[in-house]
Length: 452
Picture 1: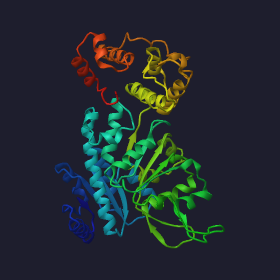
Picture 2 (picture 1 turned 120 degrees about the horizontal axis):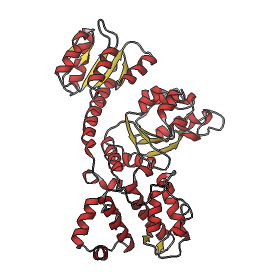
Picture 3 (picture 1 turned 90 degrees about the vertical axis):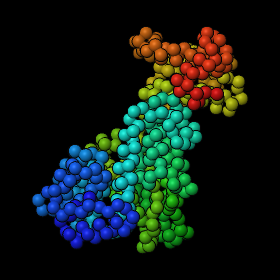
């Protein structure tokens, strides 16, 4: 539905949308009728004029989002005011367009808004415990060893976001695998044939920023003996990954925003604009809402970057990933160091499960790598794990007295499998159950994904 008190503009927008192949929109000139229409129809998208008699677009936006939060809204106005744009985004608007609206930009924005509507409604399906077996492209995630339920949700979110052209923000503590997930999203996207350019934003100052991101022409400054592509042009048709995005200096955030909004840039020393066709995936381990609240990060830039958000939980919150990852790193580093170590001693297993991993997956790999290097036994022992052997979990966390029965069974089966080098026939014999029963239990535990 398109809402504007200007009948001429209404008909123009209607014709533009219909001629693009999209469904013909309902057009409404009297803003007082909008909410009744919204309540009696399943609108996916509203295009709202900001300033109208009776009820303004901002008031309609706020009311629509309160009652129908999944309905997307685009604000159109003749007032090019950053404060209005920020307020509209705060209330939940998909975008804010300034009159006169370019027809091509309008259609692109409408398509993206409808795409996000479909995206959000698909995500609602995964609130019922997503499964690894439901992934459409499981092979794409092989590099990120995981069994925990929390990571199943992360993988599904990545798989849903990848085919869209949305800018994505990845959050999570250092060492959780944000860049790895960004690469997976790129590889699953329609931009997979383009470059994936990764940049750490903490390393740029004002003097380097424009040259490195926008490039320069020959003779732009003393020493510019040839032209140079910046990161945006290097990622043309592909993905630009901005790690530690909150580290970008405030003075440079506006320059970044302009390129993302206008999808064009000027090389240093040039007056010729260059088209920018790049998807931006950003990552941060900081509390970005706190950064915005304290005035260190621009809210309008965040809105442009955060069309889709994925949070990767820390390793301590996904306990079911610890042992699969430990076994994965054991195989990798045992092979690298030419050592025949295939199992992990139960005492070390217990310690690995209890350790809090402030450095997350990266720290776990470092622990296993160093332990493999020091190990002289045919199994990985606690004695060789110098990083964590002195660690003792808080009182009350040791033992299994308060664990569910199925968890005790799972840990015991995994312990026996570790002890037998994952020989299932031998493990079944020790457990006193048939091989088929063991296989059925492993399938129930969903442990087959990373086991040899």
